[in-house]
View (tube, helix red, strand yellow):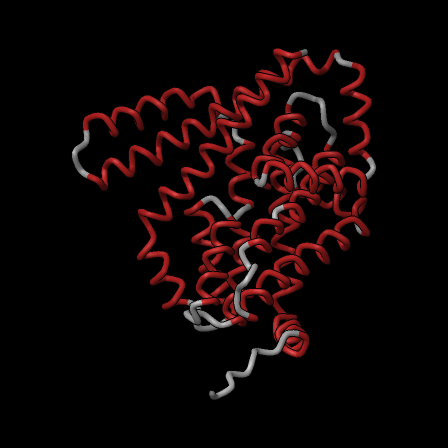
Length: 315
């Protein structure tokens, strides 16, 4: 059992290491361009939403994009209305990683590791080196998932694990587990990734995987809320909007849990369970954004009233 735990831990560490470094590398590589895109193309809510989606897909981290947005709000580069659009877009963009994780490409991760390492070693160009780093970190990410996938296989025969995992069948309890796990490891992608892996190995049902995914959406708000500490009123409102959006979406998701599972199963007819959970993640976030995007003016009005901008008094 110790060997199983250590293998899962090793895979998780590799995944988190890759996600963090991939986000940092891409932020450095795309930094100026990403900043220009955010400033240039966030002229209305829908363009802000698209920018948030695209940049999150590129950086593979909704938290990174939202934190960057909070920094921009503090610096008065974007306003609160623009920030809300970016936050909604980031919630769509993060679902693309679930689709990638659901693909059975972990066994090919050594190829990415080799190509990325080779580019780092032979290249003298910073641009090529960055490309090598990105490929290498993707390789580490998928190898981490592959390690976890192989490690959980023996858990099928462990009675205590099967009893524990059955608790996720209860939507609320499953969501709480997903939120706590995400709060601890600080990565909703990793939590959803583990849910996809466990379902693939027959250890987690569709209902359990979706419940954990719902909870992961709440747990991911912690680091963005931390980023608002000592920030401007606009930055704090951005963090509160992110939390409110996720919290209300999750509550609605839990209320309509059974019909949502049926809808996902119908849309994903014939797909594997891991692909179905990835589809559920995308459908849930997209549906949430489609509902919320029309309420942005209302939320802006409410939060502006609750947290008005501080008046600057002349000395």
